Image 1: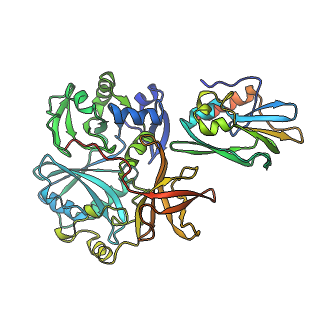
Image 2: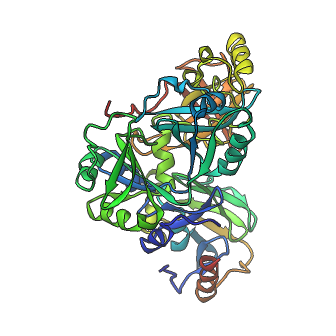
Image 3: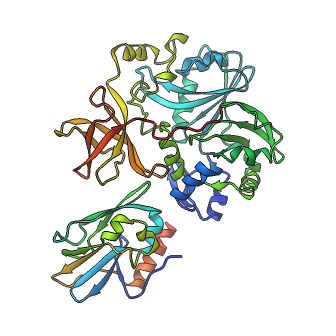
Length: 361
Length: 129
């Protein structure tokens, strides 16, 4: 199993370790609910070095990203970043990504750990005719996230960068406690917060400093519950090889008017005819927790779809879920059943997201 | 480290069993609750239902995971812990006491259960995996 440069730190903190996407990662330290709340109320510190960091440089870097990304990054200024999606020709999703515009002809693409090898191959397959250089810097640069309402003040004391005035989705070169890299105002929790890209060789020291300054270490368990409540998609759940962006309610990330890109023809067609399925929010009104893969049925027992993620929401105190169902089959307020170990348990279709993100914009 | 009371019997599925006459009180071990994390939901069978050894009789769920609980012996459910349904955190706070799950009445003597020493050895091996 692969280890991040912070593996020994997680073990020393008594984390429970699990395999995730080929990596030995902390799933929890003090407990998922406590960690979840610490991030919503204070500052949570996450080791996300398992994610991939690919550099795209060269005169055609922008044109190349426009080819592989559904989003239109032509308006992404240097020092800014955007959420994007890489699609297959048929509109299915390769991965969701963040593209950071670092400098003239210099971009960083951050991708999911579990998709890293596939994404790297995918990017390299499409460079023909583009004057670009792809570099995998995932090993040399560690990546940690500091998220929550206290993240800004905590980080401000440890860096020369003006994090207070760093824009939403902005990225800047920064020195953090003597280590040089980047800080961005991005994250995956629905809170204000930052992601730090710093040399792997120095990350243990920075991690310790941030904990000393009052951050709480957060495992992958709470990372999932934190992204779940504000409705941030997770590959393998709301998005996947067989799910297109329109079905996942990510049509806003698909910019068909920017010109052709991989998947644009299929996506144009899907948009014109309407997606076959749609993502909905569910609140369990019966006793039970919906989990990924559980069938969702109408009250007459007819099949509607399947749960993509479900759990008890630590912030809202309800058992909530997202499900991918036949488009147009249910509306907000409708009642459905979730089959939990073959037993129908009642749920209401509710508005999503469940939690309003509190970004500093 | 895990707490394994010596007066109880255990299963490799991490249930504990307290035998009193021909009833057996069942719960999940301290090790099991610590592996699971915050317990947020418990589902237990109706009183009167019968189970064979090794059959799933309910679930204990954390934020992230669903864990089945298995009957450590064959018998019928004579009582369930309704308190733990309303306050699932009892499974974490007091797994061998207020966090008990169900009481079974058994017809034939249970067999194949682990002693505390054997269970302790078993979880040590599990933890080292």
